[in-house]
Image (tube, rainbow over all chains, first blue to last red; front, side, top):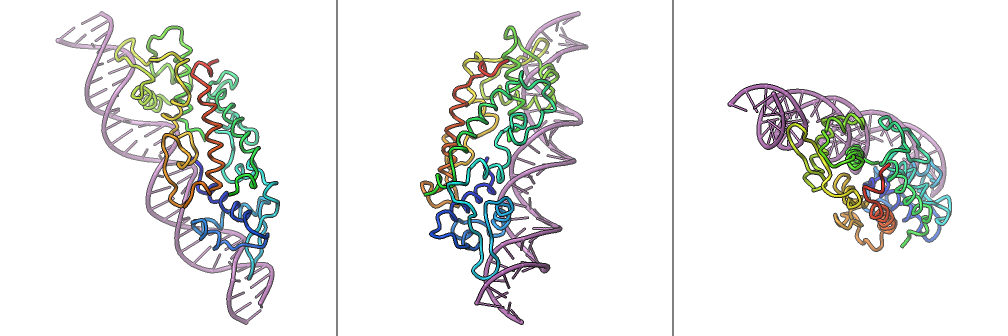
Length: 136
Length: 136
DNA sequence: TTTTACCCTATCGATTTAGTAGATTATTTG
DNA sequence: CAAATAATCTACTAAATCGATAGGGTAAAA
């Protein structure tokens, strides 16, 4: 299940990307337009800023804005930041690899075998989609 | 993240499928061989029986056994029973569809657009794999 | 210097997850 | 029949996670 955090984060990014110019948009506006709890959205935008997707400006006329062009924002990166590992199991994760404690041999594991395929299929989708691709 | 329930369930199914004949295997044996908490495994095997994947036999020489041939057990079905919906979001689910409460229009939703692709990619994998395919 | 709006910390209730304990029922075997 | 065996059922618990909320603190602009 996709977390609300990821869902809201994606919606916020899409909202910013669909703006005319790249001037700052206030949290309150995004929250209202996208039906998101404002306080919750604050923390999400904060992590997106800390991880280099967004910039922010304080004071009057402030808000959040995209740092990169939508076509340069890969879904692989967004998903990893917001949702965590793309793999459903640590033993097939590229960026968050961990050995299963219970499994003696990954190469003889049916779960591993299936989840490798799942990981690749998902990666394929996320790699082929930038923020620009999921607009409108 | 894949739940332990699904992981254990898949391992148990694979264990049963890799058996020489189709005679009943006891919960205790599966639990031991696959490093699974026996009590937890009990409940998993029970749901797999109730959903038509396994048969069971009580008393001495009893245990669980596959009802269908491994090549006839589709991962789509197993995953839906153990893990739940394949879609990451209800609004793109084939078997568990639900409208998002917050989203006014699915067709204008970026999350929907992305998650549709993810769903299809996952379905593709699960449809192309039977229990027989993930053995060894 | 006041307002705006981002930034930070803490907490909370609900839900889910993984596992545990104990009793019961059905089957086989002596 | 009785005893052993192994699945079945009911109930409970600890821990983690999720989504949300509260309440300030701080930097920047007017």
